[in-house]
Length: 255
Image 1: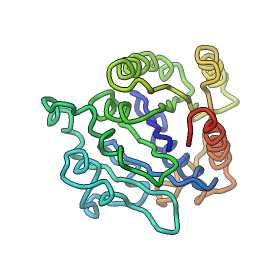
Image 2: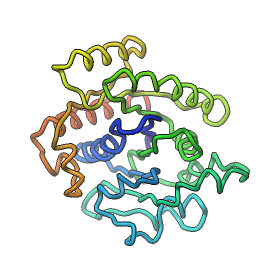
Image 3: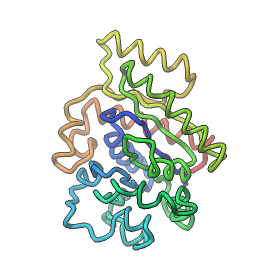
């Protein structure tokens, strides 16, 4: 089982889009995936058509020890894509857990007994607070969705610092194993330059480029992933290619 944190301190770079559609594309390749929404804004939760008033147990209650993970998982028996919804209460998590011993290890402990999934993907908030530290402590790998612009590239330095700190103190197995270029337009010189620069600084780490595609923005409003909504779109093609690359990486990082 591969546990992957999709993380970037910068907002609006496509973390939720990548989590949802990579998960769906992996399922189309025969994998079983659990997606965990760790963002108080609940974008991944809404993308599954789950409204706040429908949720009895979210990842917040699970982290607080008030609910079991199994009780918080949503999904259909005939589909191998499952989700654990978020809660607006996650906004106060850092303050609530500030003085709790071992609070960085909560998510890792929760997942320690989980079996039956090929992949667990974390959709992280655009911050580097306690929730993200939990995700990095529980994960083996980090994928960084990064908009193909220079400001996104500059934000990598802070993320690298946090990943190295977590690796040193909490999770020695943690590695950044993939960078995903998002909102990419081949016609824009800036986009091409940024991806080239990232490949230069992180050789072999760019595992996919997701082209700018209106269908990717439209699909969540229908509560569909891109493969359901527009299976022949650029977005569906790119996420299928990304999932194939991720599966190929199993040789190095296990399944």
